[in-house]
Length: 145
Image 1 (cartoon, rainbow, N blue to C red):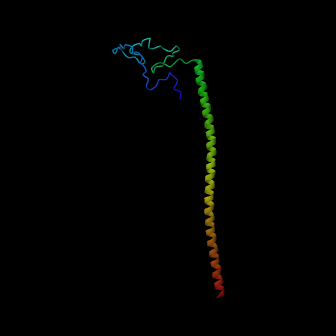
Image 2: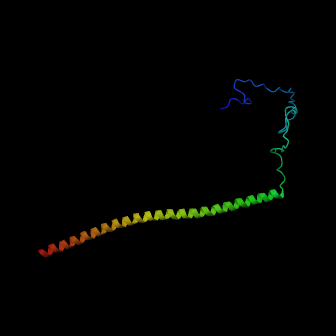
Image 3: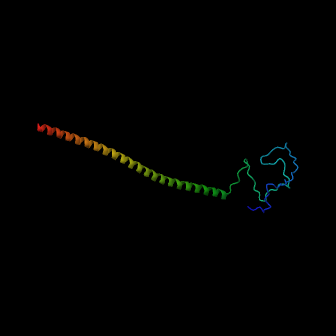
């Protein structure tokens, strides 16, 4: 940190205050939005050289020039084109995402259905074989007697 800069005051340095202007305020004068009670002294206030008038909330909007209207139209067209393009992309991405998710869900469901069908078929075949063997054993037993 450079301590050689004399333009920066130190914490212990006393900075003299600007002399106060004699204040003769007229509190009985009506207030207007954005206006001073009294006009500031010329020695204390100077308006900037290229001051632009400030818009008060009640002031009418500036007059619309043909160039400004054209600019607004271009802005609106660009906004609509970008929005339309994004919506088309969103539709495409959403459709693809939905197809992918549906494919995953259907694949999962087909695995579940196939597993259940396999288990049911195994149980049915086991029961059929059990019954067929029991019938053959019963016939074989009755033919031996």
